[in-house]
Length: 400
Ligand code: SOE
Image (cartoon, rainbow, N blue to C red):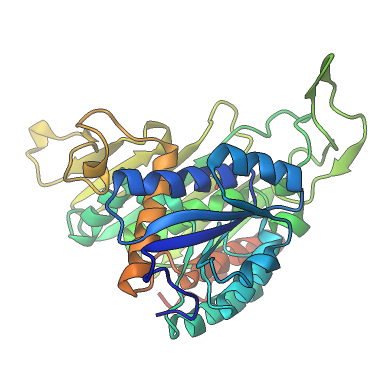
């Protein structure tokens, strides 16, 4: 078992979370909810939340029930009452925090993408492998794998129901940056985020495609575009007297608004991918379609409790995509929630992530997606950026 007190003695797994914004809220609800709906071998304890702004972190601690507040993540590493470090910060901080935490014997859950560069991801994956030898576990937060419909698609491909995989079509379409006066944020700053749509949401669809198909992207040819090159430093925001207009001062956007690329997989399949935060009208349209020699599946997160399935083995007169309502108790994770037809939401992927991490730690096995999986995604992102820069096809270095 790990250097850190794994909690086995107390039956608790104490968490220190770094960051408290959108992902901090998504993770907080997951740590709180998981033991209520799943029989966990260890009970998560929301021991500490860490943020540089003590009052903001304190407000989140109050809202979600974190027991203490720290303003320096390093303090979490020296606390014997903390077993897991949950990293919910921008990508430029992932490597430093994760490597230090692993070396301190803390299990690590790190938000996606794993890092901002392949070099950082390689160092993180190496630190994770070294730590795993000491029983210290690590996971990267590609939560969409844990949407029941996506997990079931993975099972269908693995069992051969689709036959030989030939086409992979992946899109992640949002539109929250369509307005040129939507304000700057860390997600629009290459230094903080590493890239724009490519790493923020393209990473999700790349991981999903590789996991569901069971094969790695071996080469890519892509393009990237930034439609809005400057944005207001601060956006319209509520004030006591009403709302303040977006600031006149504008700052440069240093990342992509949109990315598109073709891909070859190491199993011979070909892929077409798109990631954009300017697809007007698309709010969180994470889509994956896989065409195989015996059938196809198609998923759209905006209809996340449904998986469309075309079965080539059926009589042609009855052919057609049918809607599998992925809410039966036999579907992944569903038995712990609601009766058929009631459905799950965005937050459930985060809860399932906690369930699988806690279970892996208790069982002494390495959870997935691993940092090595995160590195595989990082290699694809870097190859797309290189291809967009010189217009040629770039290998990802995937060794499957
Ligand atoms: C981008 O807007 C974003 O918040 C991603 O960063 C998350 O990973 C995704 O789950 C929702 O969209």
